[in-house]
Image 1: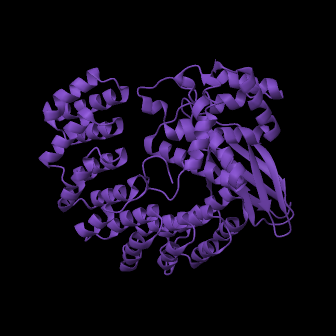
Image 2 (image 1 turned 180 degrees about the vertical axis):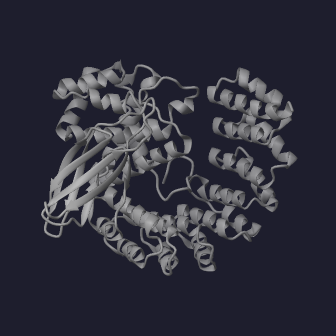
Image 3 (image 1 turned 60 degrees about the vertical axis):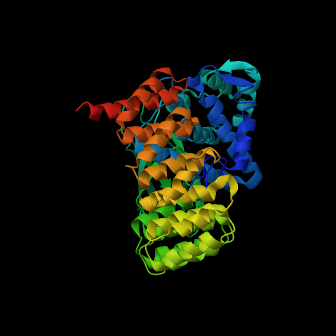
Length: 521
């Protein structure tokens, strides 16, 4: 189970209990033994602890699970960049709030993947020897990124200027557009690699080694080539037409990949590449061939095969995008899977199938699944497709006990989605301080979704803005700004000037300006 607020937006998280404990233990070395000189170098604490938790999971579960965790981290980072249009270096000092410093997608997750990439480039022996040397050299002292670079270079004799310039002192990531042509008369394969990311300040043309795998019917070959220019052409000796050309199939690079392939090659890649290559192929099949029976059969092979839960869970989740007979039935079947992650993914995906069959399957999962995370996910998906859910349904769900009250949290999320005033009497009782922070925060947000003009809600928001724990206060302050509550102006002005929490001051200042902008007209 996740240690932070319940998250019903995905079937799993990097932040499991095991991972979080190993993350915090890693701070004995990266954070305590060596401490960043300033918060501008906080990645030396948090990225390292994040990668250590991935290393622990690699030791505990295996290399493929490390590949899955780095893939998850990369997807979270890429999604953050796409949605927020923010790129910044790892070593960075221009922060307005604490939340920006501790940005999960960059400081924690991207940083962990950058370290995994550095490990692959250096090789395990040099990487771990260099890290040990770095820790011993700077034992009980303050450090910044240059200290790490110099220590790694001293320990291994390798020049890492280029790597640190790209990945520590600059921001962004490459976006590769890849294609290939097989020249049968020459028995050559020409691979074309273009970098198409915007070339703006802080984001450059990247220089990187890339692992290329080429499969033919007769043999498999792997080679590593360096991409150094905006456009590269690389020739390989290949005795016959390939059935797969995999670009960074082991997923060690921090990059976005565009690679147009046939359905046949993608199906082969889904069955034969390393895990990150399989996951990439899965997404391409769904995006390009969502109405094809061959795609459904390929996904059925994954779900009925001997693979691990992480690949099966992603396949179940992606079934939501297939527009073909049999896809919904296959997805409903996954609610009976042995591993709860697969059931969780199926429950999430069924929220996009507006049929009686999906609603019935989800209702059954709410009532009978032994895992409360799956039951909560099913309730939220059910609310998306069945607007007739009753107060009695939610009363029953709210009365059930679960870890960290995640079922109550899920019920509140679901009622908020339905935006029906009839749920307010149920919701508002959970603003009480006897419930945990996540429940109280969600209760305010769901109440606001169901009855934004309720005067009692405004009173509750004003009270929470004054007295609540930080995250609940921030939500309440944000809602006061969103609803342009003029009564809140004196309180927001006071908080913005005097509060001891810089993030709360910033939130109050932003909400104050949002209200003033309308009130002044």
